[in-house]
Length: 249
Picture 1: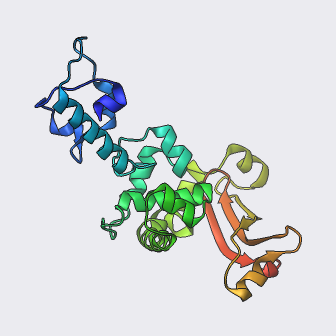
Picture 2: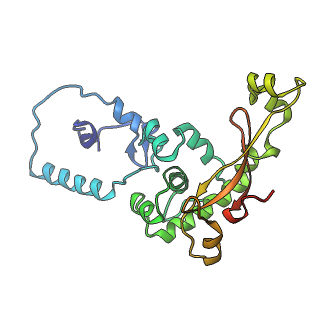
């Protein structure tokens, strides 16, 4: 792996601290730290070349498009591009999935990455199965169900909704000075912003749901949630209404 990533051949029986290893491989940070101690002519015998070819074959066959199993294999920008979260934020959300366990199909890290990638990029389940080397789109569907249940039970109550935040926190940290000056009569009043928006969804196999979510105006299937938010950052989604019921209160 060091030779493939950095072009540095590490001699056999070289020792390494355990803190620099993950699943018997060097971490991303450790690979970046390695520097050649000297430049020598490389002399390989037949057995050395054979072993290198075997290692190349094993590495290529086991390589993944996105390796989320190794916490350090992807940099922060890649995490943001794929999942919409920084690496630290990803690990924070991962800490809430206490009811999920690793399986022979996927790890908990991969399950969360698949779920967030779906939200971030909107790929089909078949595409996600290819990208994350999963068996089928049905496996992806099961992963969505497992992650969603865990997040709704342990993450959402602590981070979303009216119940997770106090009035004082909203006033002190989530309300802009402009909102207070323009829209309030008293200094302790809270400003909330409510607005309906569109969330596009795939065409459902359920005929009734398919008809009720189709918009003649947008010519697409969608639902209209009512977004209630503070003037800074905190958001609450109040119900998901089908397009045919978008004018209901």
